[in-house]
Image 1 (spheres, rainbow over the protein chains, first blue to last red):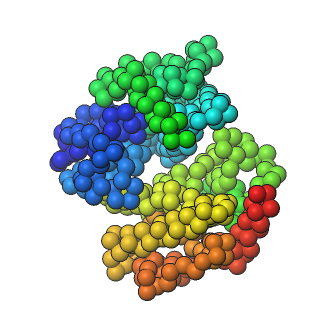
Image 2 (image 1 turned 45 degrees about the vertical axis):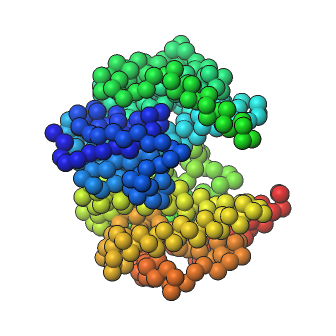
Image 3 (image 1 turned 90 degrees about the horizontal axis):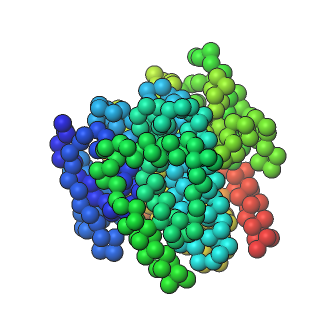
Length: 228
Length: 227
């Protein structure tokens, strides 16, 4: 099924890397995986991504593609079937791109600040911002795909793939940042979405253990405090 | 060309808004323009973009599309026939998207810090801006050697995303107190700048570089005043 050699350079807990795993796994594409040590990046990574020196990188037939959403877009172009991720309709496609990007601008940003906060003020603000972002996702699910489990309706689309990786970080955000996720009574759509995502077999393949991610979040936090 | 209603909500110096102008003008799409006062945003803007309340917003047949690169992508899907911006080839498309995104992550970010930061941070921002422009110069030489644009003979998605920063060069230099390296150092970049500036569609909406520089100084004075 795969057209040529496909290799993913990533780091096990990265939600950006997870987007790439999800896209490839949903489409049943075979690929090689290379775990990167972010304190001792491989020559291959540095040559594949000289601008940012970051994971994930997809190397397809020797050509590197960088930046997780660009990689997912690329995967969807090269392997449109099965499981097309981007809607054909331009407006629906724009909506999917918007919410994928929201994951970077608002969810990742707040979560990152939450874990690295060195003052109570920073922590509180980051926690509020994260709560707001997830609330917006709950609202969006209700508007865009009412009574459907995913942004993509009955199956995951580009927005779902972009946002789903944050689910395995919720425990870490809670442990390290004291962020408590409101329950299904408050956020029914988000919780239905989380349940639906977790029930997708392709998603279970590469999702790391939430406990391991939470442990890792603590490590990041200790380093952040240590260098403050 | 189209019997659609196309409206752009924007603020004149915004390079993000300029991306939308460029995409529409290159494709010859007619549109209404509404200048927003960012200190008194219109009800229309707040309703069209409740998440960010930012410009630009494209309103097409009553439906709002937000975030400049999402908007340009949308425009390219709706009006593909005239001046296709995204390459068909998946790898070339990914490369175009990468450099468009680089405009946000590295160029806009450095320029923004240049205007708003003080002391060491301000100095670093100037260096980061020069690094970003150097990378663009290198990329042009690698991706489209001997050609004026990222898109080869015509502007593509990456060109549209990056071109709006050209009219800010004067402002960046004024605020940063430096002179950007010239064509001897960055031959590809300057050939690209000349080529962009010579495109008729680009000339339609690009604001005066002097006015942008004045505007940049106004923001800078406010930042210094508040520091």
